Image (cartoon, rainbow, N blue to C red; front, side, top):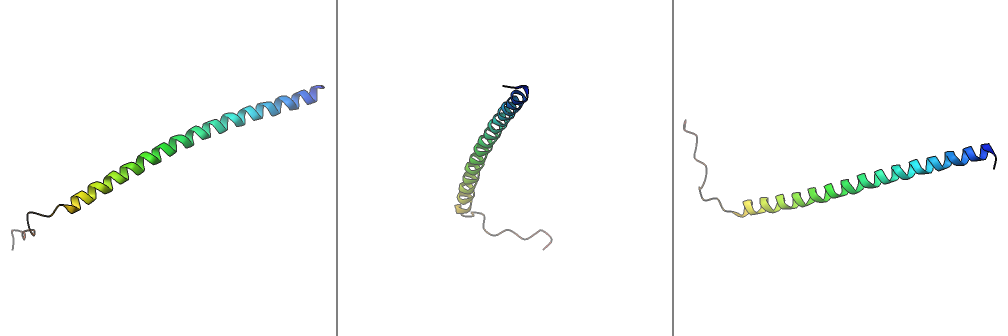
Length: 70
């Protein structure tokens, strides 16, 4: 092979290696974000259940008393 072809081949191999590294980094970031989304969804579900439990408890104090200036 001549020098020009060797240089072009080396450049292509370098680009492919860089692209593979970039793809791996993006894949790692995507997996991390997906895990965060799943954690947040679970927290929202738990908060929703807590709100339903709070709403289900009847008020035992009755209506709020008027302010003292009345």
